[in-house]
Image (cartoon, helix red, strand yellow):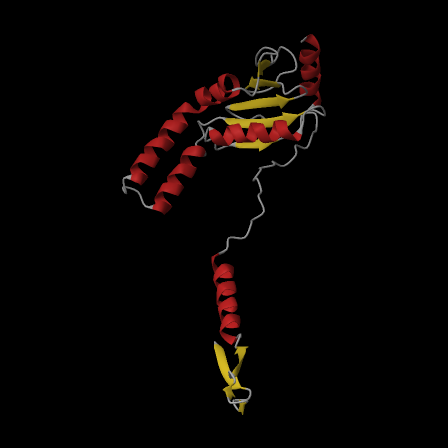
Length: 211
């Protein structure tokens, strides 16, 4: 608050009245209080940046590095150079056997008409179940805790495919992130990062060389 103090002479000289001199002093105490109130307001309402992270599942390594435990209803993606994606379904077989023919690799790319369309087709049953749960949740027919539990159960269903992501030394981090983004976009519940085994690597090199 500004205070006005009167001061100076008011006497007469030569029969004329002299104007009284005025001095001002500004009290800054209210401004300091206001500054602290604003600071407190911004501290309490500000949203601090949070570190972004991505959750990945890494299974325990097999006892024999040349083999891997069979995964029922599994689909394996092999990422390599030039943003190429190769995949096979089911158990890997390095050669023809009584269990089945030798594994053959098929190719995809990161376009919507390729990888996304493939994931949608393989995951459509589970996606439909999750969408039905979302409709019930939005209609207040399911509590939040029940909704989350049921969605988790649908994603973990044994009939839902398990997607394995493997890379060679030519693949980039961007390839892995793009793959995981597509899996999350398609509401895939089961996917893991796994080391590529030598028979798979040899088949991949053969396929890339053939292209």
